[in-house]
Image (cartoon, rainbow, N blue to C red):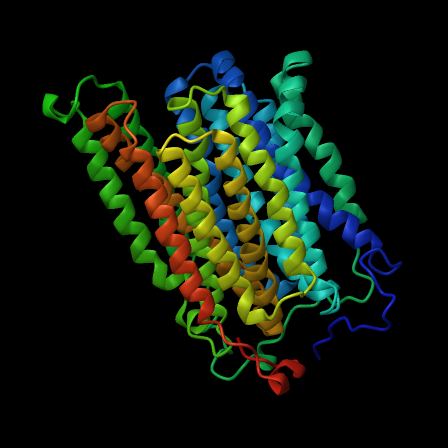
Length: 493
């Protein structure tokens, strides 16, 4: 029998006695994961200098998203079969072991291996977080908990880099990786399941018709491994191509650097390998589900790609074309993190109809990114672009958080893990592929037009705007749930 939390009164809140420990734990764990992700960017130059092996530097950043693809796919099925509490425990153990490995690394290859292990832990933790929210909290509180989750991801962006830099300068970069496990362990111990709702596996007999049996739930392990290797190779090859194009002097007429063709071939093969895995990693029974979970997943993928594409090249343009320092350019992203949280809060309060949230958020992203691009490309004061970029952050917070809330709300209990993992796989695949391909296109345009050319930035913004507009169209296709169907516990999705 499937049991779910129910509302027992209007005074029930995230910090009521029955939810307080879970709320604190589920806020602390993503906070620590996000802090570690940001800290790596701050301390890694010093670590690479001490350990040597600069040639492996790109793999430090490419390994975690690649390996997280594998663990994300596995975590979805494991959550449905054995309950998310076990998956969360496994994720915390792997994550902590990886951090200790990185902190103790005697060489760059060991550090890269630890980063890959870290990605495995991150995938397990992230998927189980979503399923735990769906199972531990009543429907009325789930959107608010997703807002807390958004804050837990945003706040480290405000304090993480500075704190990590201070620790690295005062006691050494290794301490940054040793401290976090000391906080992850008590956070996991704080997480409890008093009713057993989050620990119980979901029986295939209760699954929607046509989705029971081992064949229907066979894990796409081979596809996940191929995708992980493909994403890693795509990121690595894209980095190498970009570096060679950057290092070579002259325009396109001077010829391409030697050895570039080989890396381009690697990129092509890796991209084809990733595309070949999509039908297995984004299964038809999810994408074509009657409650439009598939459309939510597609919207998540294109919106995440749009935002990260514009976010990467926005501060770069402020530095390269406006002459701002990296710190001042980063302030734009810091302020937009605040408006992201505001958008997430609107989504968490159920203040808008379900079918309007993603289109409105995506439209705000489209408008904000368009205005930002026009202001920067016409060399207007950068603070104006910072204001318009806040609209993009607001829209992303609303749309991104809404995809999480609505996916879990519409997921049958036997598919919460599957849908959670599919949602995050779509995000990882689109972001990784887009960043790798866009990086090469950017360098080609930059090499042809020179360092002061606006064309490379215009192309990146144009791609981001088109993706945001596509996200609005996909989000508009998400139909509201039927009231009668919403009341039943066996909603197929």
